[in-house]
Length: 164
Image (cartoon, rainbow, N blue to C red):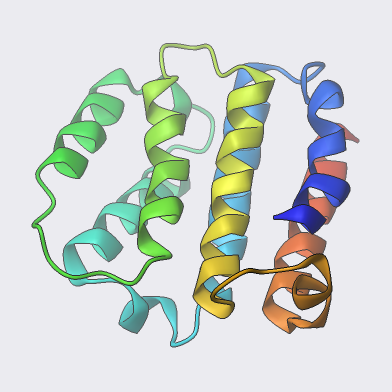
């Protein structure tokens, strides 16, 4: 996580200038951009109920791009569905990835603080990190891992785009 702390976390203060909806869109953009980085592919990496829960969020935004963030019923339903996920074996990366969305919807109600948005981004990077590297991970390990590098690059591009 050292490289994420160096490369993405410093944008935290700048995220405060964004409105809540833009921060929420940024989180979902990062979630969507992270999904292709899982190995094996996302659909094989996540158990079906977990996978479908993530996809339901992206579908909602596609169907209602201007108002998805205001859908309190969906947020409540998402958190309920999360609590009802079956207790099945999952890869270590599944937890942090889902936590990005849990944090997003727990902050629902029209207010997503910049620090919470940043935590969501951190969780996405952590998911890729733990899916690729095990044991004591150094910054050098992160630098050598192509998926970690892609995750950092994608997040940086998306943050800069949101700030533009």
